[in-house]
Length: 254
Ligand code: ADP
Ligand code: MG
Image (cartoon, rainbow, N blue to C red; front, side, top):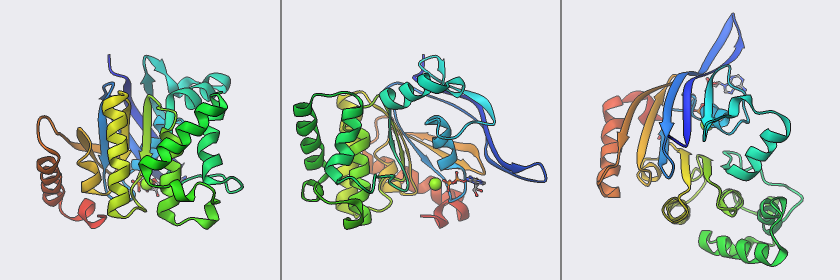
C-alpha cells in the first residue's frame, strides 16, 4: 500500500468562462520513504498540486489518500491534527512569523507538539547547525537574507522529523553551498528517518537528490524518471536530457 495516493486530482481556478486547469487529472502513488521531485515550467501547476496534498488548497475533484485516509475529506479537528502531526511544509514564500526570532519560529513547531523545553532547545540547535543558521537564531525575519529565511523555514518544517515533507522550491533562494546543506539534510531525513519527501523544484541539481522525478506540464504529468541504482551525477545528466528533449517550456524556467 502506498503512503500517498493521488486519484484523478483536479484543481480549477476561475469561472466557467475563464477557467484555469491548474491541476488537470493527476494520478500517482508515492511509496513510504520515497523522495520525489516535481519539475515543470512556471505556471505548470506545481505549487497548486503541492498545496492540494498539504490540504492548503481544496481539490476541485479527485481524492488524495494518506495511509488510506482520504485527506480531501478531512475537516476541523481531524484536518488540524493531520497538518500538525504528519506534515512538514516548506513554503515557497517562507511563511515565518515576523514577530518571532528564528529560534522561536523553529521552536514553535516543537512546542505545538508539546515537546519538553530541554528537548526543544537541543533540537533547535542541532537542526540550526546542520543547516548553517546558528548565527541567525536570535534574528527576526526582517533582519535576515532570503536564503537565511528559507533555511529557517526549512528547519521549522523538518525539526519535528515529520513523516511527509512537502517542499516548494526549498532551494530557490539559496546559494549552492546552502542548497547542498539543505538537500543533504533532506536526504538524511529520507534515509535515516524514513521520511517521505515531495519537493517541487526548477533546479536539476536539487532534483538529482530525489529517487524519482515527475515532470508536469499544463497541469498534467507527462513524464517520469527513476534514479534506480544510478549515482546522483548520472541521474542529474538524465534529468538534463529530459529537459533538453522537452526544449522550450521547462528549460526556459531554469
Ligand atoms: P507553478 O507553481 O508550477 O509555477 P501554480 O500552481 O502556481 O504553478 O499555478 C498554476 C496555474 O494556476 C497558473 O496558470 C496560475 O496562474 C494559476 N493559479 C494559481 N493560483 C491561482 C489562484 N489562486 N487563482 C487563480 N489562478 C491561480
Ligand atoms: Mg510555484
